[in-house]
Length: 410
Image 1 (tube, one colour):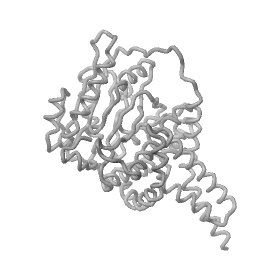
Image 2 (tube, helix red, strand yellow):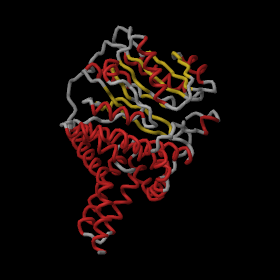
Image 3 (tube, helix red, strand yellow):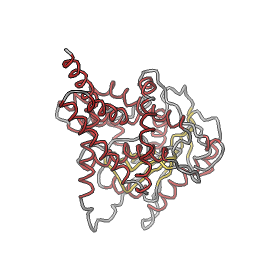
Image 4 (cartoon, helix red, strand yellow):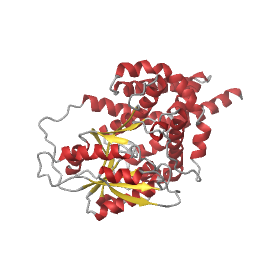
C-alpha cells in the first residue's frame, strides 16, 4: 500500500513538472544549434519600403517616456541612413488613464499622443488596440510595440525592417532587463535579471533555431497590419502577450526571432515591485493555460507541431517550483522518479548556465548564482499569489518604480 502511494506521488510530481522540463530540453537543443550554426556571409540588410509604426503604451510614465521615445527616434534615424531619407518610424504614445505629466512629456519628445480613458479592466491590451487603430490611420504597414519604461538599441529599427523585408509577419527581438543607472547591482538583482534572460532570451532564441515560434514577450515585438486583419488583437487577460501568441500559433502563425534587435527595461527597484511583476507574469501564464490550452491541444492534434510546443510553454510551471519538484522526485523512494529528477536537475543546470553565459558579464553572472537558493525560496513563497493572479478577476497592475517616482534616471 505504501509503495503504491509513493508511486502515485511520484507520478503526480513528474506529471506536473514534465511540460517545463520538456520545453527546457527543446530550447537548450535549439540554443546549441544556434551556437553551432554559422551566420551567413555577405548578406546585406534588406531594404523594406513600408512604414513602421511604433506604439508605446504608457500609464503614468512621465519620468521615463521621453527617454523611450528618443531611443526609438535615434534608432529610426539610423535606419534611414544610406536610403532616400523619406522613411521613418511614426511613434504613438497611448497615455492610458494617466494622472501625471506623461502626455506633455511624450509630446515634447516628438511623439503622437492618444489619450485613453476607460475602466482599466483590459489593462495594457486596451492601450495596444487604441495604438494599433491610430497607427493604421497613418497608413503604417507594420507596428512595433515598445513598453514606456524601455530603450531600444541603435540597430532595432533597421534589424526589424530587414526581417520584414524577408517576408516575416511577426517578429520578437531580444528583451532583457537592466539595473537602474548608477545603482549598485546586488547578487539577488543580478539573479532576477538572469532569470528574466532565461525566460525571454534563452527560450525565444532556442525555439526559433528549431523552427518553432519564438514567442511574444510583450515588449519589442512587431506585427504586420495584414496579420492583424486576419488575427485581431483581442487578448484581454493580464498576460495579453501569451494569450495573443497562443491564438496566433493555433491559427498557424509563427513568430520570428530577431537577435540583432534589442530592447531593455529597467529592473523594478524594490522587491515588492519585482514580486508583483513576476506574480502577474506567472499567474497570467496559468490563466492562459486554462483558457487557451484546449485550443492549442486541438491544433496540435491536427498536425500543428508549433502549437504543441506552445502548449508545453503555457503549461510549464514557474522554474523555481519545477526545480523544487525535481528535488522531491529525487527524494522519493521510487527508482524511475529518482532518475527523472536527476535528469531534470541536469536540464535546470544547463539552462541556468546558458542564461549566465549570454549575459554581458558572464563572470559576474556566475558569481551571482550564490544568491539562487534565497531567490528560489522567495519565489516559492509567491505561489499562492500566482494562483490568485490566475483567476478571472485578476487585473493588470502597473509595476511601481520608486526611483522613477522620485525623478531618478533609470
